[in-house]
Image (cartoon, rainbow, N blue to C red):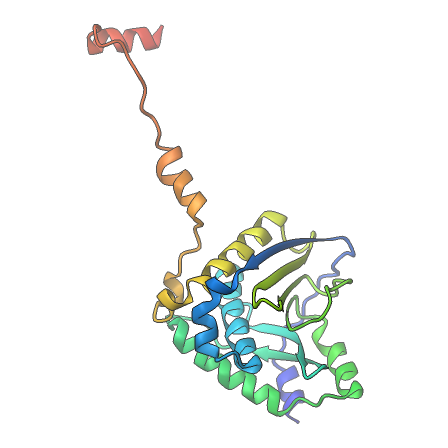
Length: 238
């Protein structure tokens, strides 16, 4: 009954995503994750909760109504296919949304059975969800079965290796790379943004800010100081 009710809320994707896909990679160092590990006490379920919350925050900022996320949950070498329904971010802070995500993850985890029949049945229902999230996968995803799949692997040195697989038909590569860069910034800057309203989280990257504020405004030019203003204008017209 629990999963039937949850499935009834799904907004199924009507897209037939092609096999050709692209992948963007990024790494977050353990030193950049110091606050994240402090916040989660290096508990796998808590880590998963915070990561999928941050993931959905950005999904809602980039794609607006994208509250559904499917996931392959890896725990104790077992895997189960599940999906999550998140509330709209509205004016919530990062901390408030993480708390809501905690309640959703606990609820899903409580109703998830780690056996093959459950995973097969769930897969048939969640494949239509364009957004997927995987944490703790032991190997890189080989086949993209949705429009957008985000995978995070925790390395032995506690760095995060991130891979964003996406259908070329579903989204342009530039947007995928932009999303990945902002996820890294959000994760590394979590301590400074924990009480920030999600709607106010910056999506403009530092290099973009430099381009907009300085490069495009670099209009300074040399001119002949012996000429009057009228003569300078006349010379430009000529």
